[in-house]
Length: 63
Image 1: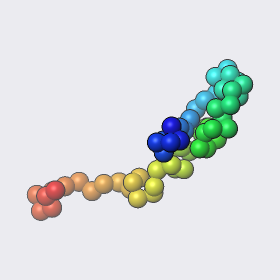
Image 2 (image 1 turned 90 degrees about the horizontal axis):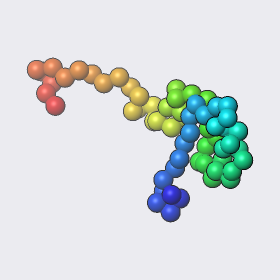
Image 3 (image 1 turned 45 degrees about the vertical axis):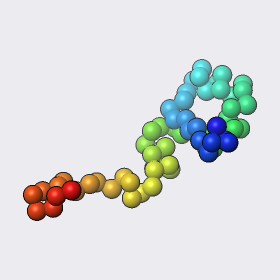
């Protein structure tokens, strides 16, 4: 994945799944610590400009 510039990010990994994950070397290979929830992942990974609400198109402003 690294050769293809692909990053793996995890969110909402808890309990037994996190316990098993920590028994592997995968956490060291991740680009970021697992996020507690999807909101935190979005804030950290998606540029702010992409999160802005989009204006609805009207007849006066066609696409």
